[in-house]
Image (cartoon, rainbow, N blue to C red; front, top):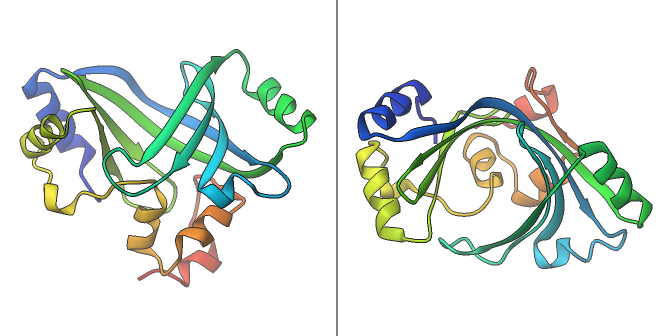
Length: 187
């Protein structure tokens, strides 16, 4: 957390990594049933406009370990139409989120340079092989002992006095000034 994306880019180029998708704005809408049944199992349905494609997916956080998040997604043609479909079948929108992301690849490891509103930039590493992740983290100058697993709520909790449930309950996370109600909770 709180990494310098410029320095990470330099190291990625030195290592021979490939920038697959430059920094772009991404937007998400998260949904659940009216009775919050997905929330009860730490799950949600998400439509995500990734800048180069739109995906519809289901995510479920089972635990905060390396492989603790289940995710199944499919490509869809249109962000707004997918949202209308979910609303038409009775789901409710829980939140809208904006982020910026730049996607790199080095071997089997996906490296995401992430920016979320109101928090410091961070890096997300993904691979099925933990040793590859540790190796890339070390080569990028990232401290493996400070690695966190799970979702972005953890990052918000490092900067603000909020719970995971509170972050999940925010109806909107958009770029711009930190809302005054949140600024009061800064650590």
